Amino acid sequence: MLNQTKQTNFNIALFTLTRTVVNTSYRMVYPFLPIFAQGLGVEPATLAMALSIRSFLGIFGPFLATIADTYDRKVGMLLGIGLFTAGSGVVALWPGFWTFILGISLVLLGNGVFIPSMNAFLGDRIPYENRGRVLAITEMSWALAFIIGIPLVRLGIETYSWVSPFLVMMIVGVVLLALSIWLVPSGKVVQSKGNTPWRNLRQVFRSWPAVAGLLAGVLFTSSNETINLIFGVWIEQQFGLDFNALTAASVVIGVSEFGGEILTSIWLDSVGKKRMIWIFLVLNSLAAMLLPFAGKKLGWAMTGLGFFYITFEIVLIGALTLMSEVLPEARATMLAATLAGFSLGRMLGDLFAPGLFEVGFWVSCLAAVILNAAACLLLTQVKVRTQTQNENAV
Image (cartoon, rainbow, N blue to C red; front, side, top):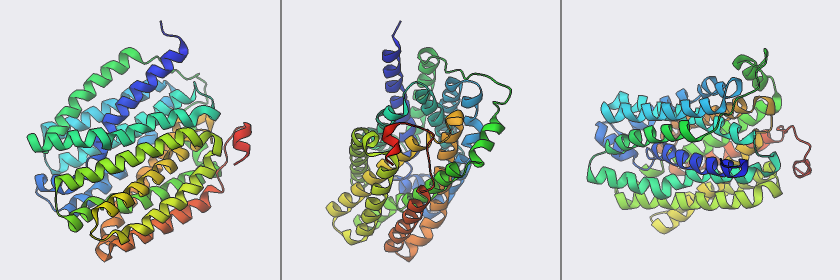
């Protein structure tokens, strides 16, 4: 029988693997947006607008993730993996425009249930002052999806068809579901009459620090999405529709994010969560302002995108860690609401990004800067419920 430390470390490894697979499925849509649009017989702009449906459905994650606060963290994680597997299967078995939208929406919804359940599971076992490092490790899956996952997706598309990655995801999802049932211990929550999903949701939306944090998340994810959604189209226009350029961009972004996660694991707990978020929102805005000056130079474009994504990744991990302690008594619901806010921000970005890009890429970048500035203001209202010396400094 594994002792608690070894069991926790093993769980972290399994969670990181699971999230790498799910994030690959979620993120592959962006660099290969023109490829999927071509396979579905629609314009990239049409598919980009349709992605707002996916982001909208992701908002409902909190209603499903409350199961992790009221019953069992493990059940929440299993539900998340199950939704991911079902979504992948829908596209793999019945490829088409609307089944594509349904499938990727289920993947996002599953991700929105799995992450808060997983973070709540780890939050129950790891003190807040050390939590940033652990969450940064699991968040490395976000970067690994681009470093490892996207090249594998490209290989599948080139060798077989655009549908093949979804079939592989479905099979891997079944394996991960079985491993989680077998190897992850129960994370049961202490039951009480007042501990209900609606009570936990009310707690979140009646707390101004929680709402301020949610709104900040909506703004900075919307900022990111205004560029994230169209970077594949931008690269296509600047350098031609080329698998090598699209894959190179994805790997550069992944490596940058991986670097951000390493930096976060080293600095986040010592510098302070809120201060770290402020610093890197400013740097992210600087990166956005510099992107339009890349011109036709692929090297400069890759450098600019790398800087943009490394800074955003640090902001994202800092925000998740910060929000994990705003309402500890409803931690899974709070984190699910945070992810729902991220989905809302991405939905808004999906809606406005194509129109902004039609005016000019510099307009997209300017919008990103303005949204980041508003997020910085809202972060002044966020407070955590902790007495630890480290966070008193923020």
